[in-house]
Amino acid sequence: MKSADDIRTLFQNAALGTGRNAHEQVFRDVLGAYQQTIQSSPATPGVWRIAMRHPVTKYAAAAVLVLAILAAVGLFHRTGSVSWAIEQSVEAMSKYTALLIEGVASERAWAEDGSLEQRPFRVWGVANAEQTMVQKYRFEFDGVTRIVTDGHKTWKYEPQAHRVTISNRPYVAFECWLGSGFLEQLKQARETHTITHWRETTAQDRATGQARVVLNLAWLEARWNGPRSLRLEFDPQTKLLLGLSQWENAEQEGPASFIAEKITYHETLPDERFEYQIPPGATVIER
Image 1 (cartoon, rainbow, N blue to C red):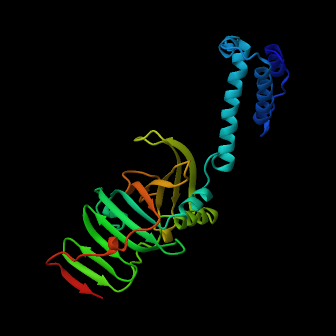
Image 2: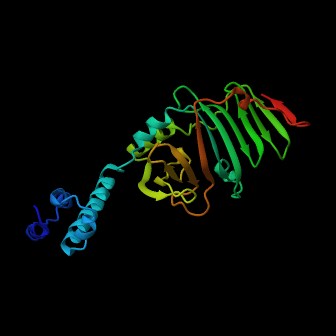
Image 3: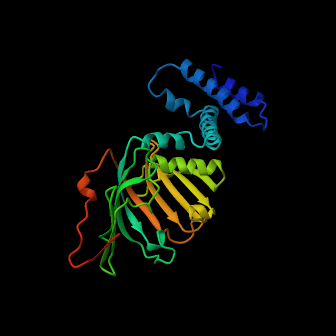
């Protein structure tokens, strides 16, 4: 193939079937012809601009572009993503044992009869050695520290009663570590069909314009506190989880009860972060 006429002939003689690999075969043929045409062209300034004025050359170039997009879409749907897979995020997040999560949440996220009003929260966490659950944990809701555990003792503050309950054990209600172990659980739940909806798409972050891989999940399983639905956003470069939203239904209807707007990863966090100062005048109950 050394001319635009040869490329035209290639299209006229192409037997385009409707089989699964048809667009990939045409893509390889056209791309090969197009590359040979470029290689045989003289390296003269402006040659690309002049060549693109020829309608057949434009058609061939456009076909290469369109077929490349189609091939990418086909690969996306067959392999999950051309640039992301949950196994990659599991590996990337396993390098970190501590994190800070910041966002907004409603009391409905942890209490079925709680309010849906969204208020700011911050969570610091350090995982256990297996990264399957939280070992150290500090939870601030609406600027007030509600729960702190150092891995041995737990302080729980109830602002309305101005009461602190001290338990000589770790805080076990927040069992799932939002890290590689969490993603492993999601992966296993998909394989066992506990998760009834799993869809991967791409999007842009509204604040930064950066690309994101978006994973939408849903399930009805009561043992997983269902029905629930999640939207997880990953950085396709680092593979790290950057954001998460949770709904108390399987359709992502209405406001989310929990939105992690920012997740910061750390190798560790200082022990001082998991110390608790009892508010003055608070009633203390020790169990």
